[in-house]
Image (cartoon, rainbow, N blue to C red; front, top):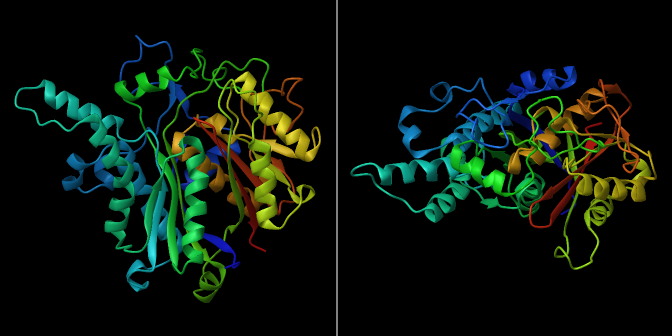
Length: 405
């Protein structure tokens, strides 16, 4: 029940790189993928910037027969799962028939498919599927399509906690390993960059109105004006350490601790419980705060939310007590894919002993007393990383990762 869960494979699709290598090289260079929207004309909208995966060609990754049944989110997820499984070196056909499964996160997926169904309704003779059916189906379709393609017939599931989902899904996968599964594909990939999805993002009231990609998303800065939405994410192959060792797999690191909390209702006067999630995750990992070498922050880009996160970190580590980074400034916030991409970044940071930069932010605001890694990557000895995530509606999640050695 206490055996370590380790990551043996990573797959990535991000606005600044499709595939792990392309994305990680761009991250270390501080290269952003945030730019003006290109998938539709954003001229009539008050927010016009996004993190799009521009170099993804559907037909290069997805069989033609699946194109009518899927949308952008599922196509990206299938490509990312393929890379993660290949990277792990595992042969799915050699796994126990019901021993390997898939647990993913979802939140924004289904908008594009739902929009397509509405357009079909408007056209003569079109077939209509309700918006509710579209979302319900797409919350499960990523998991199902990945399972079918790779014959992973074991336990499966989908978690819907917005940005926090990428951590929650991996934690659920770890639970499945502890209950006897041999291998899990887990994480999150999300996309809702279509007119209907964009309208929903705008309704949330958090998008930055800036038209300058270098000024639109500035978490922890005094100049923060909101967030930028992106698409993509990461999927991981998670195994028990003994199973990975037995087959001679390369290990990126271990998913050593996790916790989730829920904030009180707005206006109730209750304080954020993000800090409590971090403390509980460290307790789950059997570690203390002084053993954390780097924090991958949620980095909302909203002044109040940033102050709340900075305060939680200062209370846990002391002001300026630990290096903090937010590489999502190069991709935007990816909904359910955001936290899993941070997990991938943290694992590679531990593997290569380097902290990626928070681009465009020159220094944190006075009310955010953080040792924010800005400008360029910082070389440091790293053994333990803390990853934080917050989802709309009050979801908080924290994960602790440890290096493989």
